[in-house]
Image (cartoon, rainbow, N blue to C red; front, side, top):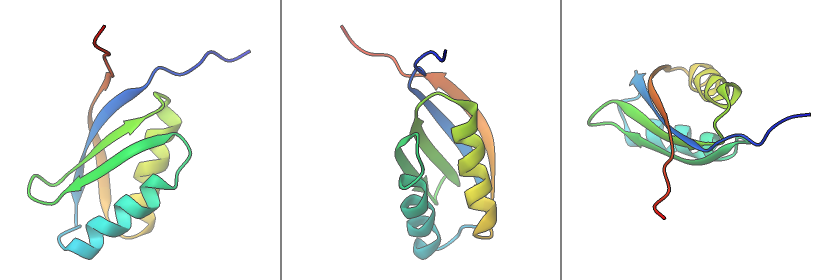
Length: 85
């Protein structure tokens, strides 16, 4: 029996992705991964901002995907998404 994952946001530090094509590739492939609801690459701050299903496997998949296309990503922080009621 598995419990529903709690949606979270994470920030990953990004190394090596310095051009627009790099950012577009990471966002394109990241959005195709199961569990990712939104991904944004900010070249200025050298970060990936991620909204995902809350499972550690999803973050690991993003890091592996970034490495596979030739860059490096490391988890900086992760937090639960809060909803305003």
